[in-house]
Image (cartoon, rainbow, N blue to C red):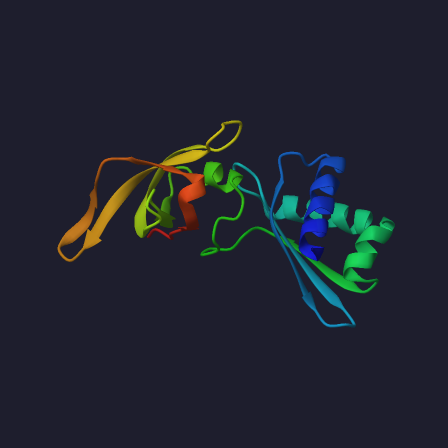
Length: 171
């Protein structure tokens, strides 16, 4: 409940600060009874810079200080951190698929019979905004002994079937 209310407030604050291109990925609240630690993860469709994270942090601090609603959620004593999602973090916001088009993903998904599968592949397209059934197109890479990243036919996966997606680091 606290997380959802805080997320809603942060989204409104981003728009009020003129940061419409920045979207909220996740908000985490940790800490003790004495001090709360609020970690805000943000991104853009093209990647986010440290400078933009700093501007968002300053904006949120100003808005947090003026809001009694936020103080009721996190207390008077809190520590605010704004950053981008780290390597290995699962995709939490559908707009992150747009951001990671062309990258390698590791997915866990279910088929129409609710059977769980895992796949690694290159994200070719992401139709996730303004469509009735958001989906991605993934070019699976077959892994295994003696196979050096053999590509197979692209697969269309609806987002409702994807249970977990993580961007893979490529060397």
